[in-house]
Image 1 (tube, rainbow, N blue to C red):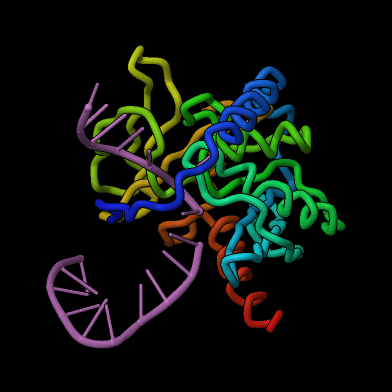
Image 2: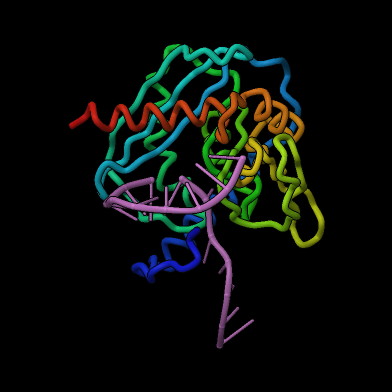
Length: 228
DNA sequence: GCGACAG
DNA sequence: ATCTTGTCGC
């Protein structure tokens, strides 16, 4: 666990202010609603950094609900921003969008690794990507960014709400496997909590991570070897 | 003022 | 995210 973080270079306050504004503008375009129809294809995506200055973005598409891998693509580009809590999307989304365009089989919904509305300004990378692609998205994160919750029971399938200080629902904390740290699931764009949670559970195959994210992670590792 | 802080 | 060995528990 990251109890202590070594002090990194202080991000430019003017840049942070500007990006925060852009984030608020994007937020006005988000829509939380149930899926129009059951998905036939669900995508997973992941970002990794082969070197400090290059980002490798991966997209995988699985047939739903069989979860068989249909397609996998990647794109390597330059890193343009350091990691800043709350502004993750500005660092990873640009390159992810390029990778997305390489997909021949477009998905009906995307499971993003990171948060959806469970974000300080309700605009985590899942919501951000959803708006820019105008496609349904939801986030599945391994760590909490914001919100309060009670530890869910240690058995697979246990769920407890993630809320803000006023009690509004931000997402759900889900135990995806017995006795492993829970996942933080929240809707991004054109999706609601029930859908995000239902699809996450439907994508579990005995591992902590649901298949879209797990396979995206796996292929990111493979592609990393391939590009050297 | 102090602590928290996705990937 | 990334670096990086052995080790504890189911």
